Length: 558
Image (cartoon, rainbow, N blue to C red; front, side):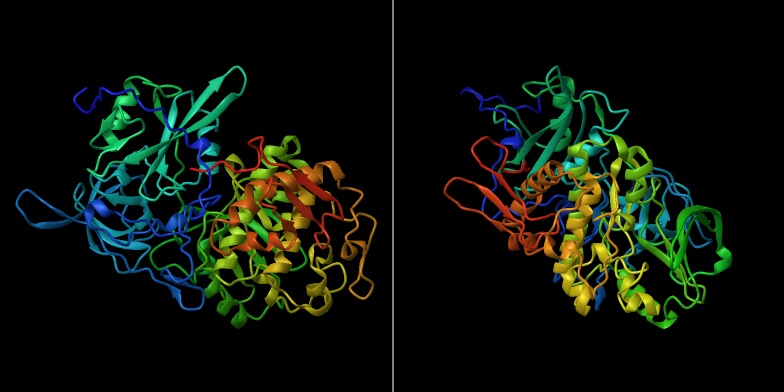
């Protein structure tokens, strides 16, 4: 092939980034990279993927200052030398309002106005129509972002989850940004063998100083497109040749439409009740007859409409792929909260009565890691959940978990709830200082996360069964006793694996929700031993140890 440069010297070994070690400067992340996307080849400096948006504080987002949603479009030079702003559609989209523009995948657009961030005013070069389009549904023409196989800032575990989903045969692949090497990419391929069965292998794609790309130095390419073409024609040292692009999910838009925040109650059709609680009922429904949504209807008097609207303005700016997106609100009582719809319901119901009953430990660890990734973002945004438990985690297709109801607990005005007693207050999930003195911090969220782990390993059983604790008489959970419903061996195993996959990477990244784990963890450097001393940890008083040297301690990166 003309795109391959062959070297006379012995070919270097293929680099499988499964074996990459964590460097001190590497920011390991479970999920996607929390920095905005950039398009250097087109001079595009700030067109973030808002569907997967989670920039750290100080990079365009502040909880109380709002999201910096201004964007710069990519200006391409035509053959005539004039500057034209051209983007291409990555997915189909059906207009939801009169101001929206319907389009099909592959249509090209001229962007007329991109200053409103999430929704751009555009003109289709295919149909001639104009209107608002979701900015995360388009990419610059001829960029790698426009390629079906490019998944951008997708985390390693998320890549594995998508590749291993039903319908992807051996050789299915995707390319994503490397989590450990700036400017590099990772090629993830679904493979199979007699020992491991279906699994995913990852190869680091490095960039040459001259601008080319390579996996092994004996085969170098000018573009990623040429690299994909070469390995599609033959494995050439990879585990398998590239047979097809991984199935991708159509992302949620940011918001329901261009200007749909406070919406009319009449625009919502409540079709099926999904659940009920002390303060609200949850329904599946549609907005404008076009968009599936979940609607939480708050019972009158639950919270002040003014306080709710103030908090909702903050909540809608929290954007992360592990947080349930807040779409819109109906601000008059009864208050309606409109969010994205998660098909599998709450994690609690999923574990007790749904498909979750058959899940094995690796799946449970993955779900715990997803929750921790979302909570790490919440902490980076200087926010507190206050009511973290399996009932407030929602599950979607392919075991995707997202955190819901963050921040709402602070607004509840029920006397029994605010007194932190009685059946309405989730005391079994609440840290002692929060239950006794109302001191909610990210550390009290970490305590609740520990209780959530016990719900995972017991498949949704109530923590500390048989007890009806009151703050005035602290129950055994405040003293670190183990719950009878939580098998000690399974709990310690989950804690060990979660420490390996989550706590260790926190050492190499920025301060996050996971750093609170280090309160309970000592890491002697001599032999790589991990010792978790659960003196305060709600899983109990047991000690969990895992010695290094067998390849199980260091998390897989890349």
